[in-house]
Length: 366
Ligand SMILES: *Cc1c(COP(=O)(O)O)cnc(C)c1O
Image 1 (cartoon, helix red, strand yellow):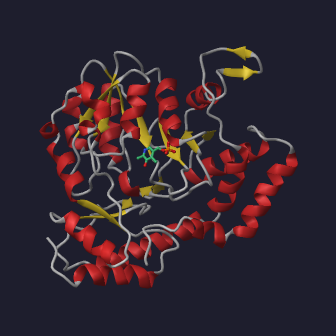
Image 2 (cartoon, helix red, strand yellow; image 1 turned 60 degrees about the horizontal axis):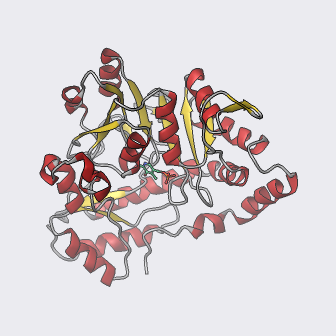
């Protein structure tokens, strides 16, 4: 059996360090925010090359609080990818704004910067690109259009820990960068966790206040905040894992290279990595017009796969109210029918990755 992802493996690798970190928090008597969260924030900001990090409860809250800090709300529009995990859209609608979907570049699956300008209206407040599958979106043209049109850029980096764009780590290119440390992400906690990073002191400060009941001084509430604080136990675990993130990303890169070699003649459409882009390889996503057949064959061979994602946001019942027809966004729809994610993770043996590639290539695929 080759699982899609073995979540327990990272804990087993680092058991003594993680156990000690958790014990340290338990013994400290400090269970909300405090020194462990502050230390992780400093370490994460430094790793990302950002001036500030604010630890939050999860990645969806990171997106929501980033938009709130930018005063995005009712009557505003936010440009989002048509091809993304639904959290990106949910953050926009959670603040009362309208998601305006833009189709992907079919080669990278990421939002196509060339299509963004045409989607901007007088109501547009922000652009929310996603570094999908851990592959940085082409940020320069997006930042240029945002600057020219006076828009904010909020990056959904929930899959892009350690990825680089033109040599610089994702973390402070746009106004705010939003992170998830959901257990399955490249840097994953042992439960829910999230953060924002930013170079803007004003936005870091607003998000810091919003995450803690809108309060800076206990029982003095300057705004209607929420409770979305990073748990210190999770912060302590993340500090241990962060020290291994680069080594883990290297292993993901090696697996991606092995898939690329083993599947070169398979007939599948493989990931395309443009010049200047160094992906974090959160997922290794290939395309087939017989995706379901391929998935059944791999399942029968004991090889786990997942679909990211089977239903695009515009076709979800949650967004029936937007009245977008399936064919309104044909690329998003087509990708949802064709994509399949192969086993990927820092603890996947190279031999297993090669076995998966051999199993796929042993029969013709479309
Ligand atoms: C995981 C993820 C999120 C949400 O993160 P949570 O911590 O689960 O709330 C948002 N966007 C993308 C692209 C994700 O993959």
